[in-house]
Image (tube, rainbow over all chains, first blue to last red; front, side):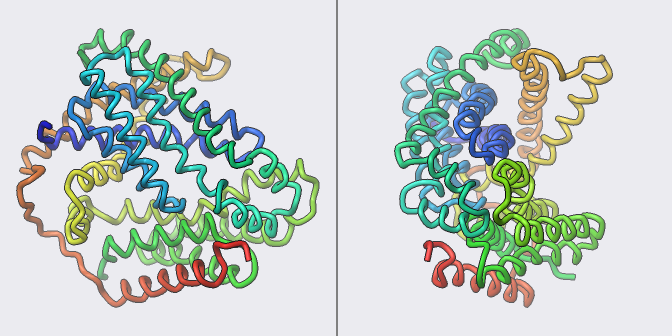
Length: 194
Length: 233
């Protein structure tokens, strides 16, 4: 394993910020329950673009893992339950392994990596599922009345947790394809990536 | 005026978000919410950002009253529209303001020092610090891209959304990758390294106000966890 330089760490920070911001903006739309599924795909799509550029800079094992941990930490800072950090770590690690398999440069694997990275989105939706779900919904019901909660409840059985992750992954993959095109069209020409 | 310790700010940010986002909005949690909504306001007043803090105050007041008194038993369609504004704001606003305060008042040096005191590894601290500093820069970049597009008469409306995405993302990504290079060069001149020991002149430490706010946060967290804030009881 090669040693990190400060440059690598700065790259991680910058692209994490961009990636997160892209997703955060879309996640705001996801607050309307009917757009729930739609938002997932859009989040993945938009988030994949900066991530793809980041991939071209990630030449050492562990950089993507650190990004995953950072994303988990931000989700935690935003008030999600703590397992979101573990989810971020796992997503980063899986992506890292795949990217290592691609020798850190085969852009063919890029879209797949973009998709896998979106697994961290699972941490964002965590309060809606499993043990957190009933309390979260009961609480919403007191505040917002039954109708709103019924809409959410009907849209989010437990399997939807995996569904929403899958949607994010698909979105990430599609975004990766789009980003690959952008990469070839703009960045390769300007010699910003090799 | 002594500055708050970055660790206190981070702790408060977590607590505010936990209480606001996943907490109850009824019963004894009404005062708890009010207190936590007031913390960013007070802190911002202390920094004499009167305009921002007053806007925050009245916006929150409006949202809070709306949520508390009108959102029960109304037409679901209208409810969902209203919810988009009130529900979203009442959950996010306090945390966003706190994050804004944290970013505006904490220098990178202070932040890194605080993290070092907590023995967090540099591989996490440096990216995290860069990230926090980078959000405002991103906003500027976005403004610049918007201006440039306006100047050349390229509107965003009525186009293929994929094209729009390309027009916006590509310049931002270009300048971002340049900024990354510049930052690395700058950090090199400042002798920032991954394994070397860091020297600093940033003064951090807990003061009286830190203790009060820390206790406040701990009390809120306690109420949240043990007095039925989380589990739907």
